[in-house]
Amino acid sequence: MSYYIIVFMNTHTAMSGEKKLQEARMKFRIMPTPTVITQSCGICIRIEDKEAINKIINENIIEFKAIYKRDNTGYELLR
Image (cartoon, rainbow, N blue to C red):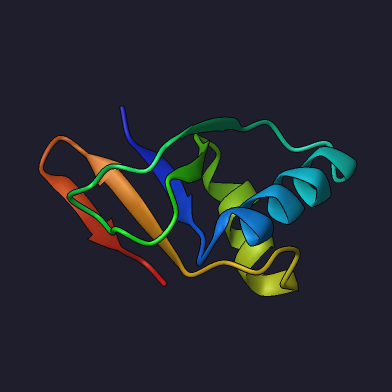
Protein backbone atom coordinates (compact mmCIF):
# COMPACT_ATOMS: atom_id res chain seq x y z
CA MET A 1 0.00 0.00 0.00
CA SER A 2 1.33 3.41 -0.91
CA TYR A 3 0.92 6.66 1.01
CA TYR A 4 2.14 10.25 0.91
CA ILE A 5 4.40 12.16 3.27
CA ILE A 6 4.31 15.93 3.60
CA VAL A 7 7.59 17.35 4.88
CA PHE A 8 7.95 20.81 6.44
CA MET A 9 10.73 23.37 6.83
CA ASN A 10 10.28 23.56 10.62
CA THR A 11 8.01 22.62 13.50
CA HIS A 12 6.04 25.88 13.24
CA THR A 13 4.93 25.20 9.65
CA ALA A 14 4.21 21.55 10.55
CA MET A 15 1.90 22.63 13.38
CA SER A 16 0.23 25.20 11.15
CA GLY A 17 -0.28 22.56 8.46
CA GLU A 18 -1.78 20.17 11.00
CA LYS A 19 -4.26 22.81 12.13
CA LYS A 20 -5.30 23.70 8.58
CA LEU A 21 -5.78 20.06 7.60
CA GLN A 22 -7.91 19.50 10.71
CA GLU A 23 -10.04 22.51 9.75
CA ALA A 24 -10.40 21.05 6.23
CA ARG A 25 -11.48 17.74 7.84
CA MET A 26 -8.80 15.74 6.05
CA LYS A 27 -7.65 12.37 7.37
CA PHE A 28 -3.96 12.28 8.24
CA ARG A 29 -1.44 11.16 10.83
CA ILE A 30 1.52 12.92 12.37
CA MET A 31 4.68 10.83 12.30
CA PRO A 32 8.46 11.24 12.62
CA THR A 33 10.08 12.32 9.37
CA PRO A 34 12.13 9.45 7.92
CA THR A 35 15.78 10.52 7.99
CA VAL A 36 16.31 8.99 4.56
CA ILE A 37 14.11 11.81 3.17
CA THR A 38 15.32 14.93 4.93
CA GLN A 39 16.91 16.34 8.05
CA SER A 40 14.82 19.54 8.16
CA CYS A 41 11.84 19.00 10.49
CA GLY A 42 11.42 16.04 12.81
CA ILE A 43 7.70 15.61 12.18
CA CYS A 44 5.75 15.11 8.99
CA ILE A 45 2.20 14.36 7.94
CA ARG A 46 1.15 11.04 6.41
CA ILE A 47 -1.87 10.95 4.09
CA GLU A 48 -3.13 7.89 2.27
CA ASP A 49 -5.67 9.63 -0.01
CA LYS A 50 -4.28 10.73 -3.41
CA GLU A 51 -7.21 13.11 -3.94
CA ALA A 52 -6.38 14.87 -0.66
CA ILE A 53 -2.76 15.30 -1.78
CA ASN A 54 -3.89 16.74 -5.11
CA LYS A 55 -6.17 19.17 -3.29
CA ILE A 56 -3.35 20.26 -0.96
CA ILE A 57 -1.06 20.90 -3.93
CA ASN A 58 -3.60 22.53 -6.26
CA GLU A 59 -5.30 24.74 -3.68
CA ASN A 60 -2.20 25.65 -1.64
CA ILE A 61 -3.97 24.64 1.57
CA ILE A 62 -0.74 24.44 3.58
CA GLU A 63 2.87 25.54 3.32
CA PHE A 64 5.24 22.58 2.91
CA LYS A 65 8.81 21.81 1.91
CA ALA A 66 8.13 18.66 -0.14
CA ILE A 67 5.68 15.83 -0.74
CA TYR A 68 6.83 12.26 -1.25
CA LYS A 69 5.02 9.13 -2.35
CA ARG A 70 6.01 6.03 -0.41
CA ASP A 71 5.60 2.61 -1.98
CA ASN A 72 7.39 -0.76 -2.00
CA THR A 73 10.38 0.67 -3.88
CA GLY A 74 11.00 3.63 -1.56
CA TYR A 75 10.26 7.35 -1.58
CA GLU A 76 9.52 9.33 -4.74
CA LEU A 77 9.61 13.13 -4.65
CA LEU A 78 6.33 14.48 -6.08
CA ARG A 79 6.68 18.15 -5.32
